[in-house]
Length: 174
Image 1 (cartoon, rainbow, N blue to C red):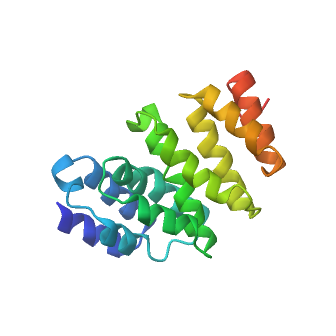
Image 2: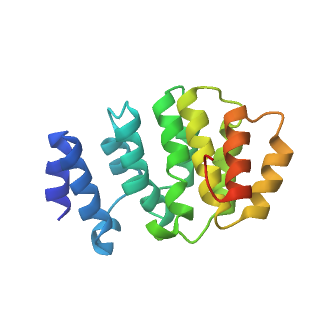
C-alpha cells in the first residue's frame, strides 16, 4: 500500500497525491510507517495554497496527531523562511482539532504553532492562523478568547475579526 501511495505521490498530479494521502491515512498499519523523513520528502515542492492545504489537512496533520510526525518537525516548519512551510505548520493543526478529521483537540500544540507565527503578516500565514484558531474555537472557545485577548495587539486585524466573529456567531463571515 505504501509503495502504491509513493508512486502516486511521485506522479505529482494533485488528484493522485490526494488519493495517495487518503490511502495512507485510511489504514492505521500504513500510517504507522510514516515518519518525519517521509513527510518531509512528500512535502517537497509544495508551493501553492491548494497543495499545501490539501497535504496539511489530509496527511501531515493526521500524521502529527497520531504521533508519526514530530512536534520538532512541525515547529521547524513554523520557523521556516519559506511561507508555504509556515502555512503548512498552521494547517497541520486543523486535524488536531477538527471533529470531521478525527481530531480530539490539542490546545498545547495548536497554540504553540500559533504563538510562533502571531507576528507574521504574510497573507497566506494570516489566513492560516485565522483558520487554526477558528477550528480550535469549536472545541475550546474560552481558550481561544483568552489567546485573542492576550495577543490582540500582535494579531493581524483579519485574524482578530474572523476569530471574534466565529466565537460570537459560529461563522467566519456575516
